[in-house]
Image (cartoon, rainbow, N blue to C red; front, top):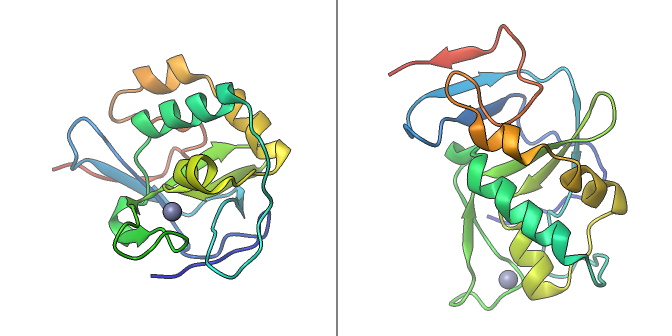
Amino acid sequence: MRVFHEDLSEYDYQDEDAFTDRESGVHALWYRPAYTRLNIGWLAAGRPYSTGPVPTAFVEKLKAVQEVQWMNVRLGVHACDLCPADEAPEGNGEVRIPGGPGIAYAAPFLITHYITAHGYRPPQAFMDAVLAVDLDAWASARWPDVPFPWVPDDAERMLE
Ligand SMILES: [Zn+2]
């Protein structure tokens, strides 16, 4: 699946955001976001992207966020389009990071691979937003809470 979106363009891949409880692997919730989602890091071969060094603390923090947040995992596997096909890593799911008021960044799971293997440098605002995540709170979230602060009270929940 090849998906390219310009950084900071509006995410319109699907209407709803869905979070899965990582501990059980089956509990899930979904809702139509009131926040605006901005694309970050949807790279594809042949499309230019910004490159440059990024702070190690940012990469480590982003990896740590991906350890605790599991979202939009049911949309299918996304393989790196920049690697040779037989070596391309695959990612499943996305990442949501709160930005300024009413803004959440929407990145593919492979974003850390793009940064570490392909020299991608995301917009500064995204790096600042990742560094601002309250990782302790996110890591301690337990169902029916999930590691994302903007889940509305009326989110639909599947309880299996
Ligand atoms: Zn790659």
